Picture (spheres, each protein chain N blue to C red):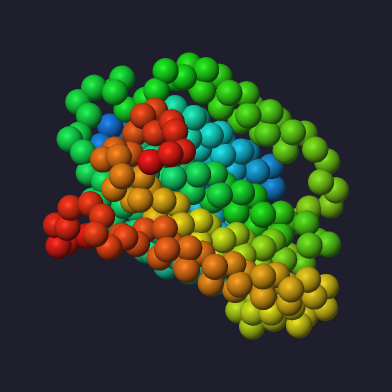
Amino acid sequence: MPPIVQQIIDALTATPPLAGYLVVGAIMFAIGTWGALIRRNAVVVFMCVELMINAVNLTLVAFGDFLPGEKGLGASYAVLVIAIAAAEIAVGLAIVLAVFRSRRTVNIDEVNTMRG
Amino acid sequence: MTVAFAFLAGMTLVSAFGVVVSRNVVHSALFMSGSFLGVSGFFVMLNAPALAAFQVLIYVGAVTVVILFGIMFTQRPQARRFRTIINHQFWAGFLVAIGVGVFLAYLLAVEDWGQTSAGNGARDVAAFGKDLLGVSPGSEIFALLFEVASVLLLVAVVAAIVVSRRKTGEGVDRGVE
């Protein structure tokens, strides 16, 4: 087998470095930020917040797997984050439904007063 | 591993982009579940298969379904043009997001994390469960966090019911909500 082919195979089967996961998490977080800032639909804003939470989870698990002193506790923190995110989505969608019931819209440009 | 990493990264990021730019809200929700699936693949690569299963069950299953319910309750005529789904901060938000992404990626990439090697995670579920309950050495804080999370979930469930409950004699009763 020529060495160049061996090099390519080695590169394809190598373990990705920690920075790769962290950069993917950072880009995902940035995309979630962008969506939460520019979208008008409140439900889509929730989805973008979920994307940001998932990016943070990815970062936590990557740290937990790669740092020796962490002993894999990043995954346990990620479970707690998932539980809190589930609670957030339940309360948030309840609020969205309550707002929709009183104003007939979920456009957050039009929902600009606290009083119903 | 690099092939799987590139595939999952592409799937996650393209789906996340699709959530933001999709005109149809239902398409956004489906793109979001695709992005969550990509993240669960990352969890498998990171020695946390139990967490990947939680991710698929909770996010791809439950959260997506709950969001689809929310979309169905608040359905409006679909936007035909891209301008109507975004507010006036398109480029400002883009600049902020680019700034956040580049700053975070740069910071996380140039930081010296010391001796890092893959495979420190607790791969077997028994050790993972002991970590979660705070009985394994070094994870005692989780005994507190577990209780706090359970109280928070109870409060959240009650709050969701209270907030979304229709007060009697208010609004039009259409018999379905």
